[in-house]
Figure 1 (cartoon, rainbow, N blue to C red):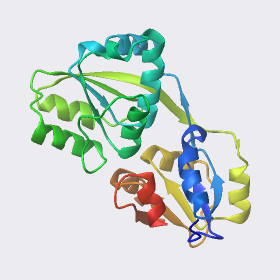
Figure 2 (figure 1 turned 135 degrees about the horizontal axis):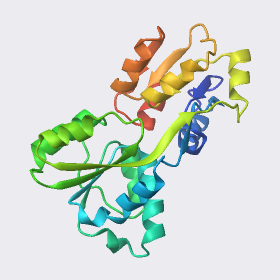
Figure 3 (figure 1 turned 30 degrees about the vertical axis):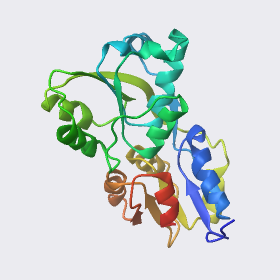
Length: 248
């Protein structure tokens, strides 16, 4: 066991459902982890429309996922409607980020396209450089707060893009882990952020930022959100949980 984080208090701001992987990585390095979930993942506002999107997925040429949450919600609904994985048809699958790709693999599906840099803009560039998607149909599965980069970018390449809103995010107003209370009392050496929405929801809590604490960002979009808050930022070399831990 590596002990390079021994005695360091590290805050994880992911949802409780998502936090376990990052918490485990940090604890394996002897960090003292404080969980402060900033958002909750809930079903989409229009559940019927989501179900219809999933049921019609086999009619598309490409399925695009930009978050593990979208993958999980999609395949839970897919296997509720279909018992055979082959019902998804002959479509191809694209993913942004290792975590998203790994979640797809958990459902025994392969990823056909993934950008080297794990941001939506790079996905559009990768399609432009590697696949002719003119007149192809694409179903983009995402949450309600996703930026329109994927839809606008792929449409500009000539694709016919439909959006499938798989979940919505809302602020976590409770303190289910006791992390807020502990953070306020004890402070921390670093706070990890895996999305821009986590940044905004964290600072909306109004918790005091500890002197000397660093903000660990998963990537450029998250870093941009952090810059408005005047904290010291360290950005991961790639947009993955493993790279965030390497930063620390």
